[in-house]
Image (cartoon, rainbow, N blue to C red; front, top):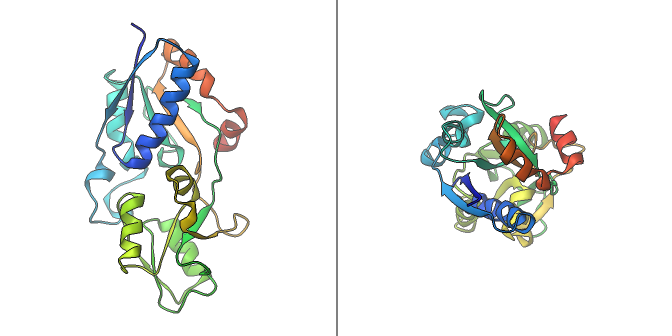
Amino acid sequence: MNKLVIGTRRSKLALIQTAFVRSMLERAHPGIAIVEEIIVTKGDRILDAPLAKIGDKGLFTREIEARLIDGSIDIAVHSYKDLPTVLPEGCAVGAVLERVPPEDVLIAARGVTLVNLPERAKVGTSSLRRIAQLLHARPDVTPADVRGNVNTRLDKLDGGEFDALILARAGIIRMGFEDRVAGVLDSNSWYHAVGQGAIAVEMRTGDERTASLLRVLEHGPTRVATNA
């Protein structure tokens, strides 16, 4: 049987992205048997500390890549922004899917912007990049660490723990929460993460059978942009 095992994180967004990749592969390769395997990463386990204090860029990928290298999975589906710049030996990006809008967004009450946020407003983000830009634009507001998946973060906002959140537009689109966006942060003045908005499918180096299956997923312009 033509079988392919996909490794994925357990978050709802990760599962949505994996299901999207799976459906594209099943349409392109009738008869393929695809199995999903959920793998818990360090970044998923430790939710009570800022990301910058618990590790490097591999927080959401290292355990998955170990399973890829040992052959227990064939491919892994990632938000490209979660991948380290240099992949572990034996791993390669087998396909890069067409990117959705890569910007960050402000999640808040309708009509709220970075400009009119009240002084000392509590803005939830776990990203040093976002904190630095937020304090550059509004040094009078208070960045506050927020962890967990998108649903958890929205629940914390709705529960009054924060006045606003800054999140990736791509995740909001894929999860169907576009109505929660107060404003898109202009990419000419607010820089999004490298690779943000793109899905990367990781594979073992030299696995020609898997590489041939993944070619249908490849979007050349997105590959060029994310490589740059």
